[in-house]
Length: 190
Image (spheres, rainbow, N blue to C red):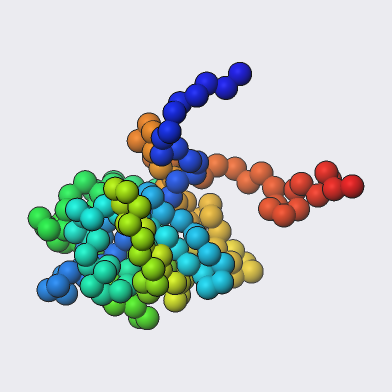
């Protein structure tokens, strides 16, 4: 039997993304965001939803760009802090001892110490109640070489990304490999 929990922001897994932007004075900022994910294959696009009250909100609208830096487990506290404090109040890169790198293809910074970087240009913004959903076309994905498999593709276990559980507000890591997507269910085909 299932128990109704009502209308909640509950979906698993939820990524923990650090969204990178520049403010009006070219100061780099990062913000933790979990209302995010892949939203289109062609063109490759990422959606990130932010409240208008956040410092990053207007920066994305002004610069028409943002980055997504994906932290590994060892930077969990850094990523969490990026969601606790506003960029209006301090330079989070300095506070956290992280390196801001100017995007090569977009007008936004990323976190050099994080293993996966996604550079995006803003293509759409939609007001959805309390949040604005920003859709960015992916211009490049950068992955630390130490996090690549032998075939050159990213290894999720080496990246060791952080997963956020919205309702309980907990952070988790990726578990064991279960099977190959678009293949594991083929035995059901008649």
